[in-house]
Length: 447
Image (cartoon, rainbow, N blue to C red; front, side, top):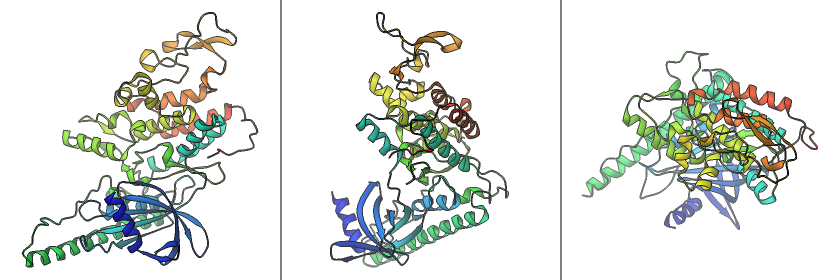
């Protein structure tokens, strides 16, 4: 409660000026009216704002950076990544950003970071999933796969990024480096102010502050990780937090926008010590959402290589959630009453009409004797074994082609998962083979 009060007070004093009944703020000489809080977490808050000169709506992310707890460099890592991959039709871009002093006398080194982002009125895939659950509806399958084709193309831009290459070339890389330089300068300024405060305290006989060095907190550099990589060579990155809540739906309803690149990490990462393995697990626990996290991030072993396959796993979990309503391992742990992490590490999941992966995986449940046998046929189970399957609606209408995309992505061994090019190829074939959705005219996904 105290923290909420402090942030409320900060809103009124930091970069804000109030007109009667409408709080407003300025970001780099652009004036915005705060409409409502969209979300919050940790040190960050996201507001729906309206630019006063154009009435355009935006999402404004505010990140508090108390000195020694949250560095400006880490807070602006997200904006740095947006600049690097801009412009891309399926990756969100930062419209603007700013760093201000927090005007906190008790913490003169504290800063506040503002990142201005586009606002999408349809929300994200998680909003659409929730609406489906409430309304007992589902995504049109073909349109959903078209949407996921866009997500895969966004991941391709990250997994196969070439230094000074597409999508934005040398200019985007320079823009990203400029963001990094601004962040580093802000952290230096914070340290200078903290040193000045400490000197005053020492002169007054009060030296309770101790060390004032800013914790670097640089988990996963962006542009700095390109040092030593020649122009045109690949410097791969993994998103590390692909999930329905991080995929926005365009206002047209036809295009996905991948967002929240604060978890972005250079790839591959070679784990050479137990300490590094534990640090990787800790960072994953902080930045990679549990039900969508790859098994190698739950139990990272010395000698392992953590690469872009983590995103392929999360991609499969996200597709499953859109088809069924929740992550496969979230669903399975609720069914069994077991630990979600144990389900992930054991690859224990299933589609609603199938046996669990631990019991053979991919086998459709047999109907009880005496039931309606209409539509019964033969299918292939484990090791090519024929099993009975039903062609009715017990499977929720999920086509076998779409199921296979999920199965390929959710291989426990990361080396057995397809790379992003293979995923794109699979989805393109599925889109070709699937019949048009009812009323399909190129159509939209409702959010």
